[in-house]
Amino acid sequence: MAAPGENLRINGDRLWDTIHEIAKIGPGIAGGSNRQTVTDEDGEGRKLFQKWCEDAGLSMGVDQMGTMFMHREGTDPDALPVYVGSHLDTQPTGGRYDGVLGVLAGLEIVRTLNDMDIKTKHPIVVTNWTNEEGTRYAPAMMASGVFAGEFTQEWAYDKEDAEGKKFGDELERIGWKGDEVVGDRKMHAFFELHIEQGPILEAEGKDIGVVTHGQGLRWIECTVTGKESHTGSTPMPMRKNAGRGLAQITELVHKIAMDNAPNAVGAIGQVNVYPNSRNIIPGKAIFTIDFRSHELDTLNRMVERLYAEAPKLCEELGVCLEHEIVGQFDPPAFDEGCVKAIRDAAERLGYSHKDIISGAGHDACWINKVAPTAMVMCPCVDGLSHNEAEDISKEWSTAGAEVLFHAVVETAEIVG
Ligand code: HGY
Ligand code: MN
Ligand code: MN
Image (cartoon, rainbow, N blue to C red; front, side, top):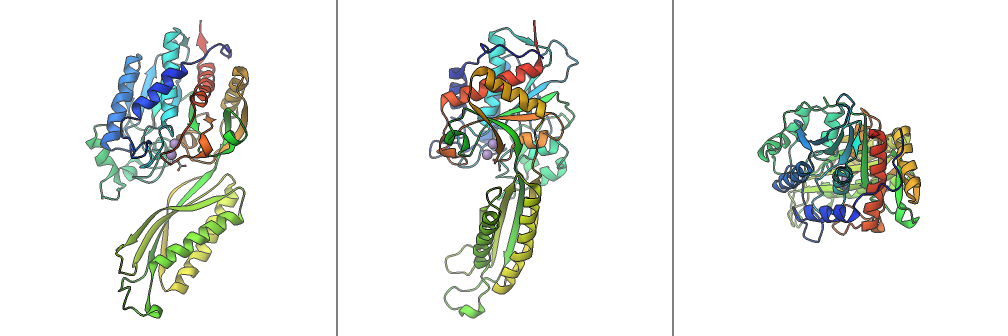
């Protein structure tokens, strides 16, 4: 496949303006975004994205998990499309770029191809995967997981949020439950641009991350049960404090990750204590452990050690522990051909680059199971993400989108 000329560039200003236009929908309280999956704000953001795509001549398909597929014709209708995208849903206190950059960079590729009247043999499909974040409804990368056959649609539809609302009902309520059977679409390749969400690229002064692998993930939901009683009148030796189980498992998770450093991380991000009253000893604590490593055996060892040590801790405290895996995927290795297209594009375009392992999970991690897949990363300020202060430069956004552009267009094969 002929590589695109190094003069083939995107309109970085237009991409930057588009990113900040959609950020007006579901704004956070501190300058970031709060456009959680299948909320009204998510629905509004989808509508704006649909308008932009249709204005660019794309036709829309939506599957039964609400994932949006925006199709640009190729010259060979029988050729499998090259997919490019990410996610428009955000964390409750998310940044403006996590996911959004990757979807809108896909739109910018189409806009640029239209401007230059460039045709490709393979169609190009810009994709917005539903519920990548997994915050309102676990697990993360939910729709791409159903697409890759990892979860059933019924299981996903039945997931409930903190208010007991089911995912499937909310998807229908916002009017984005499509008719396409999830996973029926076949892909020639899938590319995703994403901010690094870590400090490496910025610290090393690199414009581009060529993502060769991702970390595997285990989300373990724990329920520690003790006994509610008066914080004032219950003698200390009689207490069954579920909060102490939470505290000691929090420390254990940290210790397990540190003992497997530098190729492991662990924390507890979501915590609910019941009844959460100032003068009642917590009778129950429900929380989710997030373990990650790019080494599968390390990841499995971390989980085994948790299963061995956490129940003992709880027994000594007089409380009991139940746990269940609510999200998991093994460390992905991305397609070498697609990874090479990205590395060559960075080289051709004169951007500094380094091979990198993705610390965060992405839809590409699941799609990698069903199609040749790879990711491009750009730096983010202080490596900060999942924080409203998440920030990138226009230069980084442009560089990432241009490398994505070249990898997509080379794979889709320019015609004429
Ligand atoms: O959890 C993750 O890694 C992703 O940001 N959803
Ligand atoms: Mn993301
Ligand atoms: Mn995220």
